[in-house]
Image 1 (cartoon, helix red, strand yellow):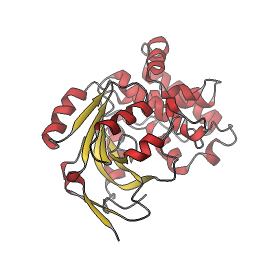
Image 2 (cartoon, one colour):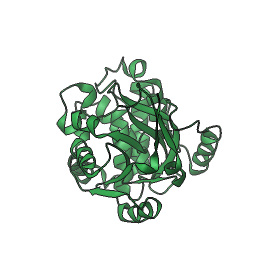
Image 3 (tube, helix red, strand yellow):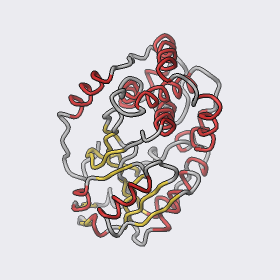
Image 4 (spheres, rainbow, N blue to C red):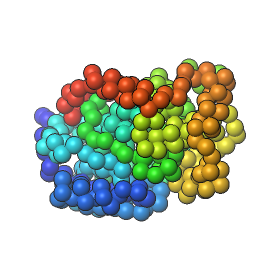
Length: 299
């Protein structure tokens, strides 16, 4: 027999770290979800999620990332759980303000405490490739179809670069493992590959969008065309060092073009640097046919 849960009956945890707009967004979220609580500044993705679980008084809770603004209507919805879904984690899509992509990155999620306390990912990884930089490869981690929020990782050049860089690294991998050049397009999941190409092409119409494009291209170049250890992407401190030492003073347009030539030549990536006008056109038509189906529909 199905169990019906009102999302409004679940605790809501706002999980922030160093997002430039986190205080502004926290005020908006408190107005939207007055019962929300906050966890801020915990280092390490695994540790931060465990801190969020500790902050919740309900066994299942909703998590909002620090650069995400939800649709208020989400909190009026219900979850219908059965034997297959009662222990699952749900990650709904977010629309990325930079490039218009709608997928799980930055989206609203609904966790169980048991899942979080048992998982070993990122800095607390169990050593499996798929858990070193991701949560999503556990069997009961469900990517969901619907989109209920907008993620805003573009308040500063660094934030946009870091968002792009992390996706440029993670979407180049095959279940957390670095593929060979020959394996790259064949084994990287097709949706990831399509999203990766959009990250590396779209966004010049948005403030700091070129930094996200350059960051994504840099992440893939560094992962696929150098001997850099891609697992360092899990550490925000290390990304800050990379930015300070190597990226903050570059011309993002010039370097995006340079890295784009490498990615096209060595990896065969079908990317291009869309103008602001072309980016707006792409985003308008990309989202025009998308419709929510209900919160329990899986991808």
